[in-house]
Image (cartoon, rainbow, N blue to C red; front, side, top):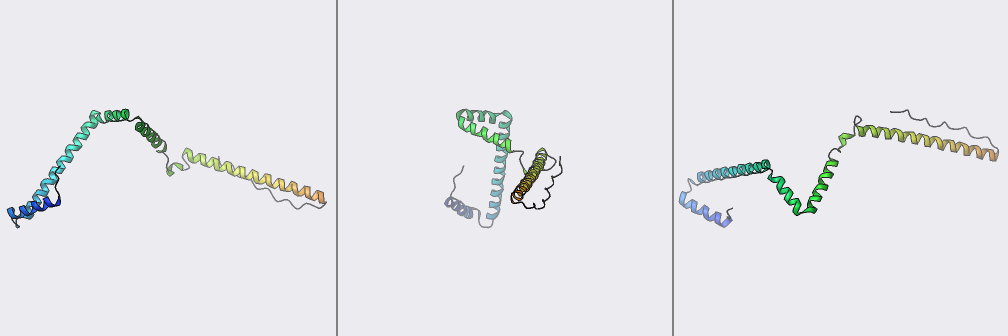
Length: 157
C-alpha cells in the first residue's frame, strides 16, 4: 500500500529525531510499532471474516465453476488429480498387516507360491530319478539310492 524505500525511512527517522528528540524517540517507535501491529491484526481479522463469509455464501464454488468453464483442460486435469488422490488415499504400509484383506491375500499368495515350489522340486526329483534309472538300465548298472522328495508345506489357510 505505502511504497517506502530506505531513503524515505531514513528521512522520516531524521525528522522524528529532530522533532521528538533523542530522549522520547524509543518510546515513539515502540508506540508506532504497537499501532502498526494492531492495524495488521485488524486487517488479518477482516480478511479472515470476508473469506469465511465467502465460504458460507458459496462464492468459492461459483468461482470454481466459472474457472472450470473458462478452462476446460485445467478442470479436466484437476479431476484426474482428484481421482488419483482418491485412489491412493488408503494405500500406506500400515494397510498390509495380517488382519487386513490385503494381508490375508498376501499370506495366501505366499502359501500358494510355497506349494508351487514344492511341487516343482518334487517333479524335478522324480525326473532325475527316472533319468538315473534310464541311464543305469542302458549301462546295466545298479541305480544310486534315491534322495527323499521334499515335503509339501502344511496348508496355512
